Amino acid sequence: QKEVEQDPGPLSVPEGAIVSLNCTYSNSAFQYFMWYRQYSRKGPELLMYTYSSGNKEDGRFTAQVDKSSKYISLFIRDSQPSDSATYLCAMSGPGGYSTLTFGKGTMLLVSP
Amino acid sequence: DVKVTQSSRYLVKRTGEKVFLECVQDMDHENMFWYRQDPGLGLRLIYFSYDVKMKEKGDIPEGYSVSREKKERFSLILESASTNQTSMYLCASSRMTDTQYFGPGTRLTVL
Image (tube, one colour):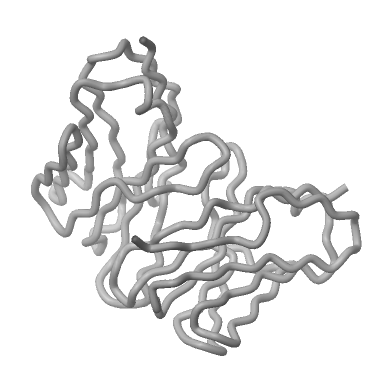
């Protein structure tokens, strides 16, 4: 079993839709969870950062962590064509040098 | 804002050449990382450094070396470039237990 699983997509939605992106993981030691957005031919940019379980909201974006199920989600409300990108989940354990374990990314396409 | 810069956006080299990729961060971060990103394989960690002159191997260090002489600068060296090192190379930096911030990437083609 891979350490972090993420559906590669592409996920195609119309503008205005609610998008749900997900990752599952196997390592129960993970405590820090991140979502990155990567536009084509660019570096990943940090979108959301959460610690342990619970929800975090930032504008149209909500990150959700369920440690009991080893499942994290990113919700995008009122999706826009500019949200079209690849979304990478990442996670790390306690202490150490903050090395991250990444999912392979989900490509999202939002059509006008 | 955290700024991570990489010396080149696009680079074309020939097989056997020695290649230097430079990364500079301006936020006094302790940790710096080098990844490569390939379609279907995702991000793979090559090397990281948690202090000046310190380095740790990542998941795929073979064929690469690194140098960190100053806190803000982390270099990736391909001693003898090969075609299978054609890839997108990404540098990142972070504080000790904080998340990582990425540079724009260098797309390296080895002919």
